[in-house]
Length: 124
Length: 124
DNA sequence: CGGCATCCCCTAAGATACTG
DNA sequence: CAGTATCTTAGGGGATGCCG
Image 1: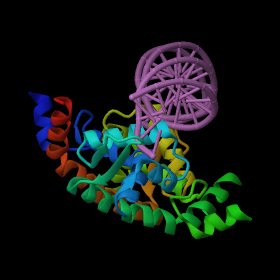
Image 2: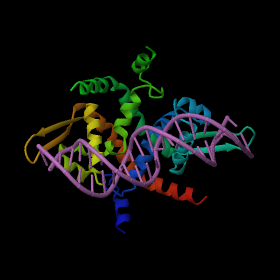
Image 3: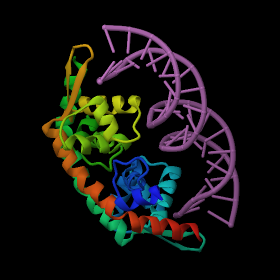
């Protein structure tokens, strides 16, 4: 019952708290970008793959499955040939994206500071 | 020069844009927790290790080095025996933490929704 | 106390090929 | 088009031992 207690308290600093896995789902390398892209609107698989430049088929597939499992992404498939699958955000996913987008903007904006910090660190 | 151009434009969706590495530094598994912990105030190495429950020496060390390299964390060492090393946030690190903390709070708060989504996903 | 060095395991991730 | 399946490799991550 201690584990349940930890889950109720929801302290991310606690080793076994589930909130850590929630955080890991949405902050993994490709999840951040997928959520941010889908915040622009629904995407089909390959369109999303082009939007999230550099992601492999496999990783995008895995990422979307994890996001679907966690209730962030809705997957709608038409069983035609060729198939047509559309991905969109759920309400929960939209909330997640709204947490992530300021983070992305910040990272883009602070790129110069980080780069010069890296250069200074090199020359020590 | 195209690479420089991409860096100036700072588009995280672009494969080679440096902003992605900035994002990866601060959203890696232990960086999020280290930044959030240090936002509470400075910590010595082992105190931080206890605060960030579950992190190994090696990973905390690596994480702090990456954060120091990127100008997020300041490392102050007294060369005594035993040594005393204090870690604290820079202004840049404080900003990063301020982006992350709402994300953490959101993850903690939405834990129940995610858990029930996972259960529903299991039983399909 | 605050590490680094070393060894080792495992999975995250990329590349390639194939299919309904 | 939207994926799976398979193979391989880089690196995340833990355990242990040592040192100033």
